[in-house]
Image (cartoon, rainbow, N blue to C red; front, side, top):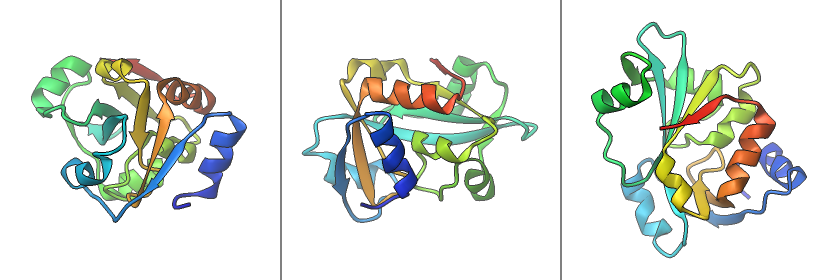
Length: 160
């Protein structure tokens, strides 16, 4: 299986069932849709932001068809001006490269620096899909599995 063995071991230890799907590298939701089409799941897009000062970082988990308007998102999240975090910050805090952003990257954030914002509409889906820290596969987990995983990592999160 593609992605870090540590992730799969953790999912098994936490008894979070998952369905594994390999596919060619996909950097965008649009590219992924042709591989996701037969999979019944709430497909997610994950975006890594930093605040204006660069001292706070946020992982925003959205339903895949959410049309992102950063100014509107800033108003919803109440965190001031946001910008996309650099590739260096993405690697530093989540241990992933662009196109592979996923809440599973939180296993690499041992200082709990990253705060999550989760699109409330994801609660409408029994299963959610995320990359296993590589954009060449997708994991489908139960919605409750995401929250069990976040509880284990100890990261702060909130709905928007």
